[in-house]
Length: 329
Ligand SMILES: *Cc1c(COP(=O)(O)O)cnc(C)c1O
Image (cartoon, rainbow, N blue to C red; front, side, top):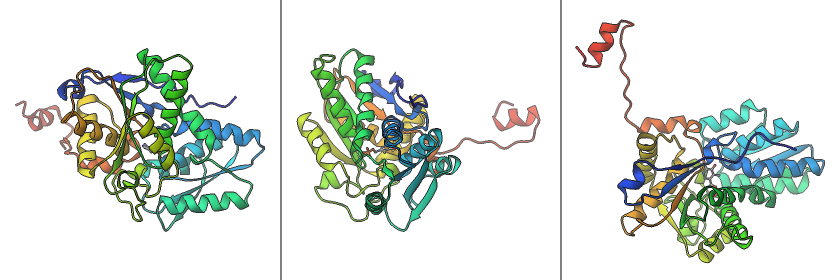
């Protein structure tokens, strides 16, 4: 009964990066094409539908940005109030713009995402609001549909799925989706789940919470993921891995996606590709079907583009001046 058009996102074959790194069957799952520009909409539509069904008047979430943008949009769609708790100074401008535009009440706390999530859980326990973080099981139920779609689009499950890991809900949801689809007989095989964290925010890789997570990829700037155990289960059951990449590697992958594929992804999404680029140096991927999840849009974090060299020529409004500036005369 409720939809903004989430899901059914394209699966795009890599034209340049895949062939160059010896992985010709590399695909990008374009989750940035969801209505608010990230995969969060898949889970949010279910969580909000359930909040409406339960007669709630407001929803609440902690967020590094995209959950807030999505919650705010679906709350507006369903005439609910939205309260979003975000870490002050660590939310990308585009995401904040979305929450503001949709009329959410924004609480910017002096702390990180983990502090915000703890506060949101406490608030939800003493106010009649639906908590719509990925600790809400309806979120994962919605997000698992992306795994169904990938199998439908390829005709079989891929061999590997590279996915950024922050609060670790999404990797858990994908694994649940692949397992359910496999059990239902729609896929013969299961993929290896390849989670990627940022080096400065890699609690699962290190095996202990990170008190002060740091990375330019704010969507995965999480020190104590809520779905930690589910993510480990996904990694172990799938014979996958969870590895870390540096911010430098993330920025390089971000530039490659934009300049060699035409995909303007946000830094957290580029982390997935950075993880693949590293593995491609060590493993033969020539026969592997690999999917990188492009979790969110680069438009959300316009400040990061300053890390790329820009080609801008400033000229008088005269054809001769343009030709001169371009070296054509
Ligand atoms: C939320 C988010 C992630 C991390 O997903 P988790 O479920 O928190 O692990 C990665 N990329 C983007 C763009 C996100 O919005």
